[in-house]
Amino acid sequence: MREAWAKFVRPSRTQLAWGIALCLVALAVVVQVQSTQSRDRYAGMRGDDLVQLLDGLTQESERLTDEVAALERTLEALQSGADADEIARQEAQRRADGLAILAGTQPAVGPGVRITISAPEGRITADLMLDAIQELRDAGAEVIEINDSIRLVAQSWVSESPQGLLIDDQSVELPIVIEAIGDPHALAEGARFRGGLVSQVESQKVGGSVAIVESPEVEIASLHHPRAPRYAEPA
Amino acid sequence: MGDATDRRPPDVTVVTGPSARTERALDASMELLNSIQRDTIDPEYAAVASGGHGRSRAPVLVVVIGLIAGLMFTTSGLRGGLRAADAVSARTELITQIDQTEQRIQELRAQGNQLSIEIEQIEREQLGDAHVLSEPDLVWSGLISVSGPGILLTISDNPKDANGTIVDQDLREVANGLWLAGAEAISINGHRLSARTAIRQAGAAVTVDYRSLTTPYRIEAIGDPGALGSAFTGNSGGSWLSFLSRNYGVTWAIERRSELLLGPDAGLGVDHAGVA
Image 1 (cartoon, rainbow over the protein chains, first blue to last red):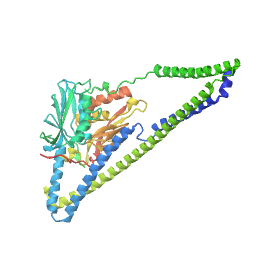
Image 2: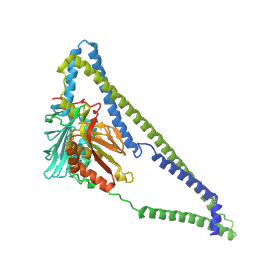
Image 3: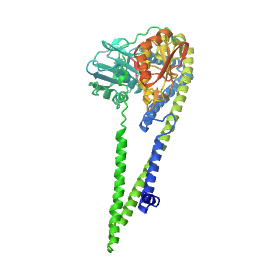
Image 4: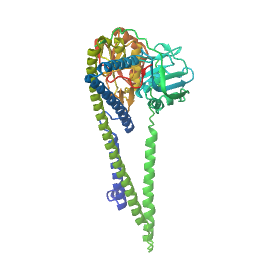
């Protein structure tokens, strides 16, 4: 025992080299561990997540830049006076159209995708549908319609009943066809994203299949028929 | 209704496996060191003891191998450290970019709102009553601020349980439950939900329209204050929250409010869709 101790306090050169090397390795490990910890409100976000977040933000900022530029042109045209009346009329019409499309009270047309989901009866849950809708909105969907008959609006809800899936109190039969207007490529990519709609539907648990068709023109004819709001008032 | 049971995979923690592995590894390395010492020193002693003149080259080899190994470990360790430092600076760079872009978005939104107001004023002067947008559409779409009675639903993470962190799926289920219960307008932490709002996850943060939110989540919903709360508690949204609170210690509460004010979904519009 004493011998072992003596050996320990008087290491050979080799042991010393090992010791120093291990010390440095430990140091490197500590540095690495520290670098992955720490940091503010983005803690817990991996590099990939941050890149994804930045991508979304950049897209949004580009969209807003275009929008602001368009508004500036409109304002300039309105102030220049020449055919301000006509421009005012056009602009008002554009705004009214946009509103009606968002509220679901007018039919809409534009580029987009047609997604067909086939699956055994009862496997498509309300949660899966909710997730799919969020994914499409995240990818920039402006108008969404289910099975050529249900026009989705802000207030739309998904639920499960003994008879099957319900959206806005209307039953959703299989196969489910989702049509969405927006950038076709972005929408298709949104659905194909790892862990997204396609991988969920084609998982063993659901055992279904998804077909995505990008189209330069998707027509959405179904309308939402809103009642007058009872509690919410313009403020 | 909301089958929340498969929400998260069960936590699998193997307690014996990794530690047993470490012990074995430790023993093995000790054995290696011991054998180096044994096998290299013993022949040397033997050679000296026997008075032989053939000196063993083994000690020199040990030193060389040890140095090479030490150098390899050290350089790989250092390089790992440098790589980690690179990762840190790349991360800092990303976060700076995110903050800048968020700032830019806020400025653009404010700019757009200001321009819209000016344009609307000129239009009103020029077109008079011909320029009237449907009020119900404005309310339902989320394009304008609305006020009215309703409920305030507050949800908080349970910091002591990793599963007690609210994720996008939870807020999605909650919003869905509130619409199902008859809500007319909803805001999450001040962000109004429209037909284009996406509730998503980016790492640890829940994002609404790419803006990251943090606990506690304040969900304001305009509707019949009494019926809204009870209908929500009884539907899939309420059972989802009950599941979270029972199993992961998430806390939530509903308060009735006689007057709520919900801002618009700023920057809401369409670019690809036209009226057919």
